[in-house]
Image 1 (cartoon, one colour):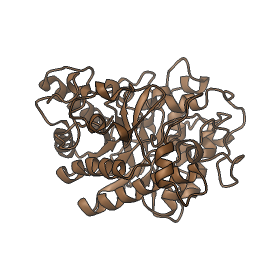
Image 2 (cartoon, helix red, strand yellow):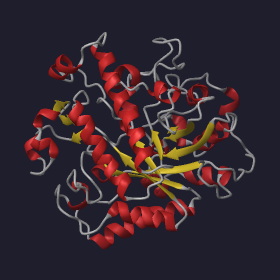
Image 3 (cartoon, helix red, strand yellow):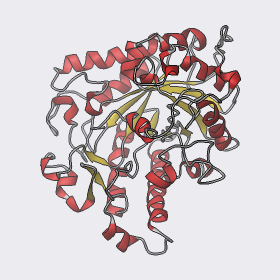
Image 4 (spheres, one colour):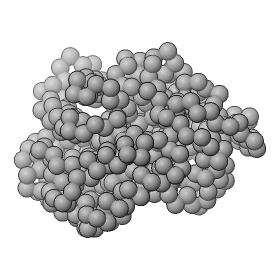
Length: 415
């Protein structure tokens, strides 16, 4: 993702808010001294495997193909060892590709040079080796991010954003495709569907980047696109949400046409809107609301059943005053109730043991409590952990505690 680690934006979004609260769900805060044995019913037990900025894989650019492959298989083996069943593999981190795409250049995170052939097929290998281990492999794409720097001339000569600089917007020192342009929407959908057509992936996955996170003092310059395509909308915000709605709906249709049975899921920032903004919102005081700031109406996508699962990034501890896990999880359970859309909770394993985080994250049992709390809500069909590096390193044993308390038996992913 050419970036701060993507979950760092969730931290930044609440940076101005108060710290650990004292309210929350008192019962949930209690340590489950003797959790019930996890039933082997189908449940998502996933981990994100991030490639942007070489966060998880490969460990650095320029490794020999054999070393890259060995590291990739090591992450898959870790998932098996911890009785996970799904790996969400980032294969299009920044308008590039981890497979031989006819649309976009090879990712620079492989060789250090965008467009340089790494000599092997990471996505094809990941799908084949995951299936050989009994794991599902979900292909994780970012639709609109182009580069962590703003100059199209620094991209590979064949890069579509370099050939069509009018498709791009510079914002916050980075480069993005403009979601308001129909040719952009057509192109990014085709680029992603190419991987779905080529490989028997089990899922298509997007994360939390639609319109970019707000940058203080800057504006996303889409004036020309709005003038050309915004007629009929009451304001620019409504038009921007419509643009994202179109991509979600059209991608869902494309996935189901190209490879029926493949699930399409999205992992948004965990707050749709605060209740102070909208009575339908969550009891939170988040500094970012996806509906208003990212123009992503995640609640609508569930209600319209455009997606098969939603995995909100609930990256806060139980009792956190601004966004309490124990209150957000039931809110999302109500959102999906009766829709048929499955709910998975995105878990901030990366915070466990981080001294910069609140005291709750220094307790190895915090994440296990999240899973204990989730048992109270039938709509919660599993959890996904960010991310693979922390799953393997397990800094303070938080993942080991989850496995001991909840993953004693293998479980298949929900269908």
